Image (tube, rainbow, N blue to C red; front, side, top):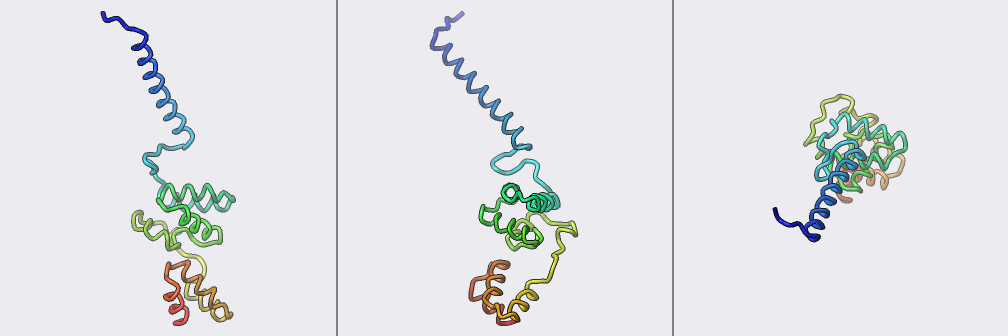
Length: 161
């Protein structure tokens, strides 16, 4: 039987501590997050309807930061983009009607009628109302924000209405 010296015992002890730390860290992360996450993407993603309900509910409760986190976790949107979407939801827009959600809609088709329906007047109607009220600059800003158009394109759109 080989002789185990203090150096070998120290190496074995360090390895045990490292393995224990990894196991404890994994258990704590699973408890904290509520669901396993691999590479920043949830392993059990929400459905499109579930995302809609979660983001809308959190926003209505005044938990915009948590709504942004959930939106980013599910969609992969950047911080600014997710904040823009949550701000629009807070102002009463439907989550799935936001232009930034187009790539998410392509990856996760939305089948529920409640997430497809867009409440309120369409963009053209709102632009016409702003233009009639003499607020053409605000109409251009609205078009740019909802469509992602450049300034000149948005001006041409507003002038055409």
